[in-house]
Length: 241
Image 1 (spheres, one colour):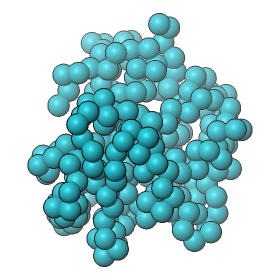
Image 2 (cartoon, rainbow, N blue to C red; image 1 turned 180 degrees about the horizontal axis):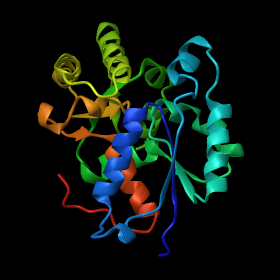
Image 3 (cartoon, helix red, strand yellow; image 1 turned 90 degrees about the vertical axis):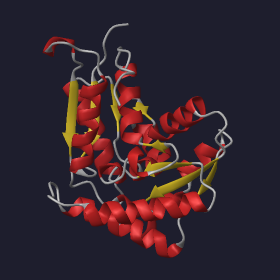
Image 4 (cartoon, rainbow, N blue to C red; image 1 turned 90 degrees about the horizontal axis):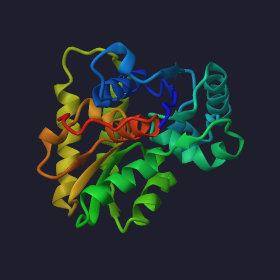
């Protein structure tokens, strides 16, 4: 298969985009520079807040997303990935006028959960309030026979404070409080019956990982990176912890 150029429309937030690119590098089988994939990144933190648009009628991110996709096409990208879960709530609106194919994080995550854990039935979801209320991710998971558990109203406030806490400081020296907050909410979802937990916002894996939980932890950043490597023409490495 001829290699294809990955277009990353990021900046939502910037550190999540950095983590996503890091996963692409880790998962690409390469022993020298020239064996890595070509990746074009438009990190645009000026894209309007997706949660504000979903919940409060704030400016839509769709025009800026379309402009970013067009810019990536002009630069030579063959397809686009959006390392932001909340942005995918606008995917149906975005797709008709998109100038490049978009690799859906929702599809990638749902298929990875079902393919890797065929007996799993109930997932806890840590996501923005906008993602949860939009319901698109839950509906995609339901197509795989997966039920979604979401935090209580009080715990959802904790999740949002954690997400925006991560966004507030790009390179902190101490995130223990944010980590413990996310971990506590995840454990309460597990106590409520969740058999696995999805990091349904790309800031969550920056403070929470599989080592924090006694059930499978699904990181859409990693899953999307693996899917992007595959779509670009290489087999993602399976030996990366």
